[in-house]
Image (cartoon, rainbow, N blue to C red; front, side, top):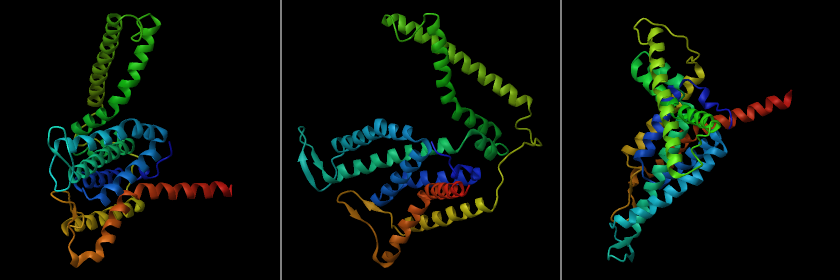
Length: 300
């Protein structure tokens, strides 16, 4: 796991960035857009989480990609190019297979971006951004984001404690393991409910959500954040322009075709480059910071 320089930017910059890349990944089905987004998403995820992200990609994402790509042509029989016929007589078309692959890539891309989002957008950033506008929702979101890892850690703690007194959930008969597992889950759920009540009472006692309440924050919007936000805005504007001009439009049915128009074709590469620049922005920032840090260390 590497230190993320992009995560040190202002929370507004991080939020706007992820809203843009996740939104574009969900709506653009052009193969070039999909390729740019999936490569950048997984590269950034691996930079953030290291071998863990690579293991998740190979164990979960790759099978999901294959399964989604295989299932679509089995149920979707649209398309003019027939490759073969299934045993039930329905055609297997090139267009449905291609669309299945594209849909699968889009799915794992969005999941990868959300994985990066979960690492960068911590609970304190949510509270900072939404605390004064919608304090109740910001508190719920921050608690939800940290609930899963805390719940998993607590399960391990309770399971180890129960194991010491002979209530291991992994040994014994099926009924004994089930009874011990239910006991562990009951303890953890009770802990989670008590923790939620204590957190709510604590935040209420501290005046959270009151109109005139002030709060300390380490986040400051400086020139670096302004430049980054302006860069994101320029890229987003260029990408939206490309969508309006149908640069990113791609047809899968009834035949595969790129739906571009000739009068603006010279701008096509620049508009795709804008999408690449946006998706690769955190990677470029981190690489630049790593090079600068190594250069400083070599001078010591």
